[in-house]
Length: 91
Image (cartoon, rainbow, N blue to C red):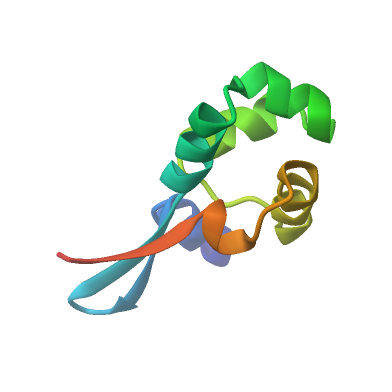
């Protein structure tokens, strides 16, 4: 029971690397790519078959399964680097 409580206290969109650094995923490149392709989130959803909840997770820069990222890359004919970046920040 205590282990479950510990995991609920962890930040959802970032991971601690050490005591002074935090690593998080950003999907800003995905949103820029959609703009370049004149697409909306709904278009991405239809093209990939993703749920609204998954699109919302992406919008909040939350973790998603790598299979989701592969589906997006396949649908948009792009590479992973075109969809997300890893950001490092000091606390």
